[in-house]
Length: 64
Image (cartoon, rainbow, N blue to C red; front, top):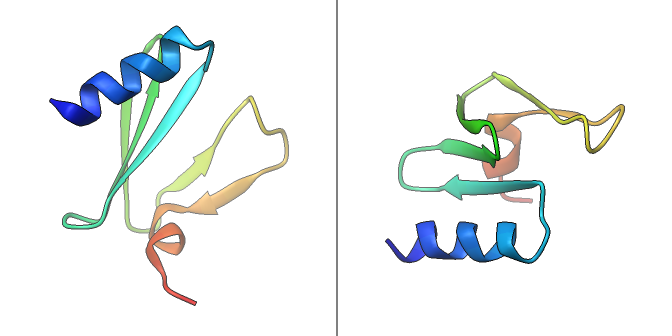
């Protein structure tokens, strides 16, 4: 519930997209006004808000 409230807070502040990484499951939740996408593993995250940006979900969880 806390994460849901935070996502709503970001939307209330004007965000058009919110990314939430769940380290326990390795899932990336991409929240937008049109719904939620869940990406895992080698699925590619792309956003119209960042033209040219693309990254595999799994790469967001890697430690440097």
